Image (cartoon, helix red, strand yellow):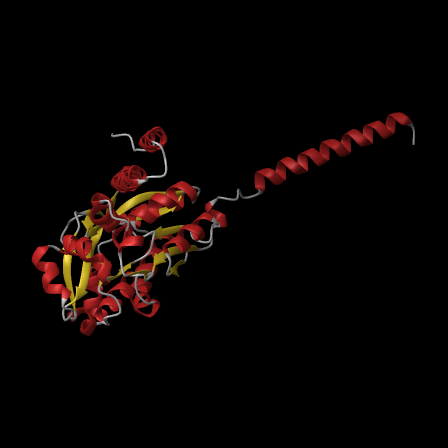
Length: 333
């Protein structure tokens, strides 16, 4: 083969190869295209046993699947951190979260809030409670002086259960309003302190006299009234928090735009009262990330008070750490 013919054939090969690559790139489907999404795992924080959750969630997931056009599968987790990690690593693409869980997921798992739960009474929020067994001798005394005050004054004689460190109503809110504001460290204050892991577990621990006092949400108590009325009858509320922003509905920010739009359409318009009744909600409304700035402010305020209470660091170091935390406060809009 002469040199001229070799060069011509080599050039033709290179052009052909380049053309194939361009055509291949044009015909291939981008990784986050809706065509590559064949199903969505929807994260569900199991605040009670999965056997109780499935009859509630399966009709809701079926309705969501019909609207979105692909299967939506409930992904049940019993630990709050688990749904964050599942979303972080792409095992979960959307979820119904608590406020504190969402704030963390927004930082590390590309979570983006787009809707907010509306309670059955029309409020966009819920409450944290301290509860005790009706037959426990402490209960009437706690109600008489205020449950939060009683717990602070008698912590050394009490056993106490938080829900989960990533729970809004089961940890963050009662931690701040009861302990942080009174400069009390619950880890040191109680006769015994445990993390029960879920709202249901906290409620049952009180109903079964395994702990004196526990944290729980008003929503979880309402569900317990249906799933275990005998246990609910044994429980007395001894403290109620200020209103907590309603739960966010979130998806990963890298979901295809058309799937995001279909999820939005479903949550903004879904009104089936029969399916929503077990959740004890009226529906959902459009929401943005800023709806949960209150949770961020609570977390930062709690950290600031913890720093101020430390005795092993200098005043200048305290001021520096507090200044760094204050920079993290959400900007008012």
